[in-house]
Image (cartoon, rainbow, N blue to C red; front, side, top):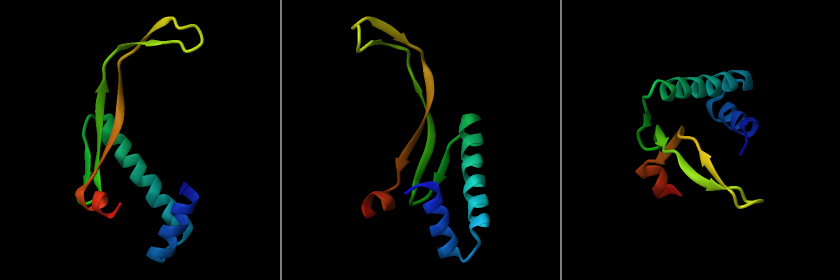
Length: 89
C-alpha cells in the first residue's frame, strides 16, 4: 500500500475528503519525525512504538573490490510492533 492508497482508505473509512486525509497523514508523519529527532519515542498502544536506535561505527566491504571501508555511526528510526498488531498478522 502506498500513500495514495492509504489516503483513499482513510478518506473512505472516516468519511472525510482526500485532502483532509492527506493532511492527517502529513501531520502524523511530521509529529513522529519531530519527536524522534528530539530523542523521544512515540507509542501507539496496540499498534507499536517508533523509537531511535544508535548504530555504531563499523567496518564494511566494497562488494566490487573487496576493500575494507569504514561505515560511520548514525541514528536510525526503529519500529517495534505491539502485541495486538503482531497477533493480527
